[in-house]
Image 1 (cartoon, rainbow, N blue to C red):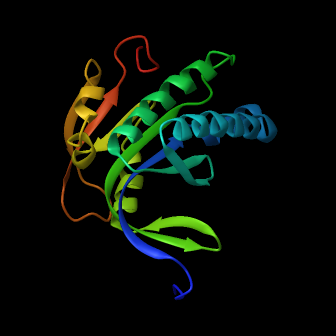
Image 2: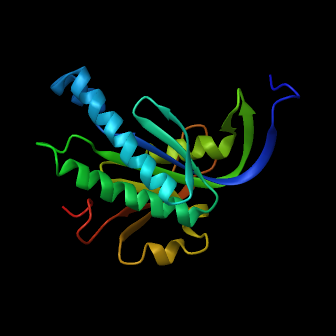
Length: 190
């Protein structure tokens, strides 16, 4: 129950969710302390990219990040920057231990201030989290709402962008999504 003394509003926000592929196996393979240290370092890297692209970390959930942006272009720029930063980070490790997956969606969301912290609720947040679940290693998935926003197509020029339809759990209608991978010199180049 939201009390009257807590702030609540509806805003058009772009949400970015990340997750690490294979993190359970990472903890098993290198041990809890080493794996946790890598996860913390990856949070630091992602945080710098998020803030550097006018975003804010809403929260971390396990080894995942939920971030918000005022524009889809900033969010996509951050997602691309995250893939590059994690690629650089992995180059300092004996193995590619940190494998990032990213998803983005935009739309109206309920913004609530609870206990002096901003959080978001609603179907836009749910869809963003589900879209991230479509991504595999070093992939970014964006919804049509993000892809068709001002400046996003130009930003993605020269990258491997694959459109498809996706059925997301808890979402009635099939959604148009786009898979993005770097094609030149980035982490996605294999």
